[in-house]
Image (cartoon, rainbow, N blue to C red):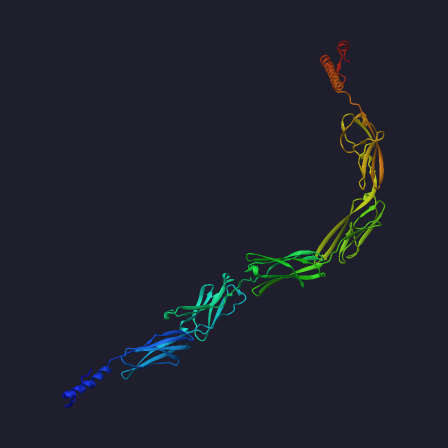
Length: 552
């Protein structure tokens, strides 16, 4: 401070000194500093909200405390050194200025008002219906509105995992993030969230998320499916068709179509792991010719297709027809002596052969007649048919058996007409009869009418002796054969044993006598030399002759 210099002469008197003191005191008081406070400082209010602003000063005699703002204000209270104002409908950031006059001087103070508002809209852009695994996926989030932008962020999320965080700048902001699609992302939810962080202002963290969007990822191999189909299919028949594709994800959500020409096939689809299998039944209900079976597998808006050729043909044969007066295909049975027509036919391009006799050409039938005899019963007729389809020869064979009705016949060779049996022994009457239908064979004793079992073992007694009539009967007639049975009385066991013993003893005596004679002759034999011969025969003589004769 620069000291004041006294005025020359005038201020040296007591009056002058008093005036100087009176003049200088206000000057010293003006130099004292006073302040004006605006509370609260750096105010934060929601858009459209209200604020209470207090202007206060430490000036001992303040005058005209005012609040300068473009906002609507209302004085709500005042006192010594302070005045309170109510601000309503605060819609934008602004600055308020308080002023007061203190000892003729104006003192001012200010505070900033920050208005916060939540975004009007936050939305995650639609995801693709299907996203290939291993390819980049771009996520886009749109945030509209929101303030203050310095504290407003947009967060992209996969479930609860944070993928990207960016400040939302501008009235309408689009934030983006790129991620690599994985198998694990199939069925995952993606969303966008805005966050308004006012914790430094003492308010807290405000946030809101968009509606989640579900991602579907897929893997569709570049290789086509495998299609297993028959090469040929006859009209009116059905065969299974299989279509398989490996390396598919998710296999359970793939769509499969199987078609025969323009005819869609009703397929059964199953999946195991990354393998998809579709099975259907192909029925040849269309005309003959070359057709295609198509298998189409669709997943994620993409498809894989394979086609295989199928040749449909008509064989409708061979057909065997045994026709006659009382015979048809359902009952190929005729009486003996009936004329039978045997016919074999097939399709127009089929070559048939009946019992080795070929037809004149493809599509023509072959037939012959025969007069049915019992030898034709159970005779089988064979028809062979061949058809060339797409360079391959197809074969079909069919046979039919003819039944001829004829009367019963008893074969004498299989039914002995004279029998000699021992009493009380087990015997079997062997007789057989033939015929169609099979005849019933009964053997009855002529005198008593007692039936004897045929083909069944039985014990023979004396009363079985006699003449029997063996009669074979069927719907076609009757034949009878006479059989004579003689039963011999069986000797007692003691007599049989005695005869056997005597026989053995007699044989032993004869054998012993023969051996004795032979031994005696050998011991007494004399041998002579025949001198008139160049060879020497050996002869034997009795002992008396050897003593009386001379050698010749």
